[in-house]
Length: 389
Image (cartoon, rainbow, N blue to C red):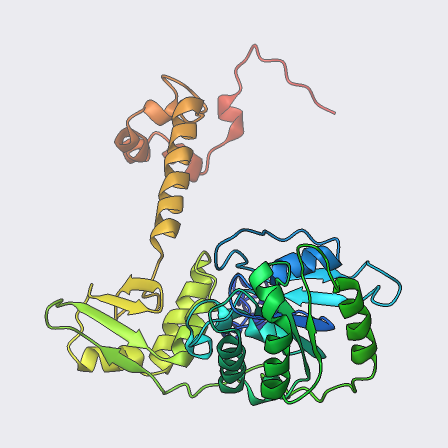
């Protein structure tokens, strides 16, 4: 709610009051918002399994590629552009997962949410690993621990790095073991470096994604963004003091803090109204009862003022006093520059005469003749010329 203007405080006596309110303080809250990328296929695997190399081979994306773990530290997106079969497929590469990723180990927990909205998961198995089957089982366990819904997503498994001679010699055996552990036949041996079977993989992925139904994603947590209530009990306040700091009082309460924020402290009439509100709420009386004396420091929210129970205006902000003092000094300076005040006579005029002599002029009887009856003919001399009609 916005604050009331001065028209709301107009009365028959005060036709143009300099009183207005600021708007009510709004409600505040902290929200944690997560961004989840949308892709058709999400790449999973242990660090350095070749996920980024596969993304670069299948799309125009150029992620960082190096021969050490955790080269990828942010999710990368790419659109498949090889062949007509897989063209247009959106791919998402996330950082590698390790054991304990669901509990925060590595970078998994920070990026697993990005594959929650993918229709299919592509599990990349490093053929040069000491235990490729163990890596596959570990990643699937971490998925189940992190999110049951994510663990139920359909997967396609690829055995990467068959360009290495040792892996090429054992690829048939490893592929067969992966099919047994995975429980399906969607397993393919590829080489992301030489792009062997990459085009065929993208074509199969696009067909597989096309037949997948739209998964019912778990509902996101609902946040009530409606306006919070701003009406509070006026008598709900608390006065605190610390014996270590005598003469200081802290007044806290939702309502009194609200009216303090809504007060225009630059207007003396508004400040005076705040003082009357403190008296109406019983805060001034309670401060006196607890021993607050004239001049004690009283704090309300971020505002502080000297306690003055005998005055209706308990708080004049320091900046307002400074401004008034500045205006007064400027006015005095202007008067000094203008010179002395104008007078009818600079010197020797009636303003320089003895006022006591002026007051006693009639005491000598000089003007008594004005009060007596006299004959005007006595004032006419023989040689005077008198005009008559």
